[in-house]
Length: 206
Image (cartoon, rainbow, N blue to C red; front, side, top):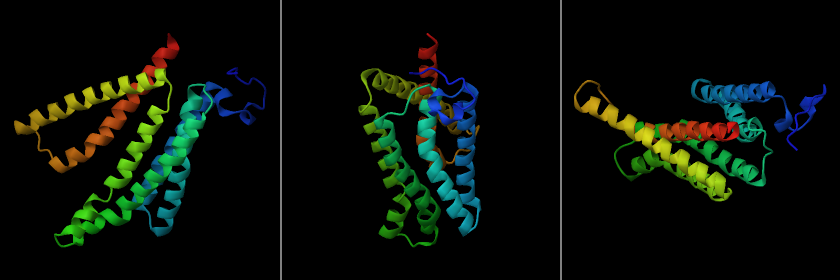
């Protein structure tokens, strides 16, 4: 089932059967596409922003399936559902951050300014709910791995945030409170993702 394809046409086979170097190369290329798409959406003109949005839209679901292939596992129905539900949330978030959220700078104080400033929260909450559905739909072992990785991620972010908090309170560093709050969720996602990958790798090496 998970036997590697050894003939010259290995690239025609499912990705999870590809040689290790090929699977990691595809992941690197796709990650580069994701970063390039975001850069085009932020720095490019209107045409380049549309191209960047399309590139980002295609690379997000592909990354989900590549992650399974790197672990030599076939994408399951739950992975396909996660890709279908997560990608629109990220697209809406990028569109809101590019074209809606910046409008608050020119608005007078009031409810419209509050709604505009909070507009990115909705797609973020959407993505969080999709992630929760994905975890709850996994088997018992995978749920335990997710919970353990989340606990490690929370511990890392808590220690790092307290470290910077103490440095800021002692006036060693000048810390923007709003920026610090905005970075909590991305930092938690990053630490959780790294912890989860490390756990999966450790379990496969045992």
